Length: 203
Ligand SMILES: Nc1ncnc2c1ncn2[C@@H]1O[C@H](COP(=O)(O)OP(=O)(O)O)[C@@H](O)[C@H]1O
Ligand SMILES: O=C(O)C1=C[C@@H](OP(=O)(O)O)[C@@H](O)[C@H](O)C1
Ligand SMILES: [Mg+2]
Image (cartoon, rainbow, N blue to C red; front, side, top):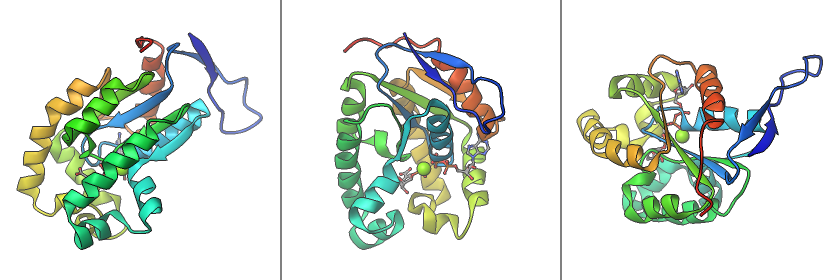
């Protein structure tokens, strides 16, 4: 086991508690549907652990100079998925990193194998009902949620994707957290507590 000091908000607070991380842990990967909080919780968790945070969509956007909706509109979803796979392969080389996937990253078998077979990788599934996730995306703002997330354009198709992806999210994850009634801060706190109980194989 290795220890991590959880960072505090201000310098006049008491000594931060330390948590014990699984010994072989190199990176934490957040998976789940759109709106499950991967990007939000990933940033909070990385702050608390004193680790780097990497958002796969933001990484693709900075590599290409285009936004995700632009990539969908100009080159189609298949092109975006290729960029996503290559970004994932490079992101999984990082250590002491919390990585937020896109909701569709686990659709690809190649991506699932990469996630399963990269040693030191702890994948966590942030779960909630489709209705809650859809509402979170609609409320997120600014701007049109469908423009921000092209896969939400047709709600029936989005629900079908949600259903078809659930088994992959579940299978990849060593830890699943139901976030239905949790705030982002509560979700982060529960994840930190759960980390102490996780064991990871050495390879
Ligand atoms: N556990 C949660 N409870 C309530 N709202 C949340 C929760 N997690 C995320 N949100 C909100 O949902 C929206 C989508 O979160 P985001 O991190 O972008 O999700 P994802 O990256 O999984 O698509 C944000 O406005 C965020 O504040
Ligand atoms: O579910 C999907 O297919 C997608 C989810 C998005 O990421 P978030 O899950 O972070 O919204 C983004 O990768 C893209 O719009 C496609
Ligand atoms: Mg995201």
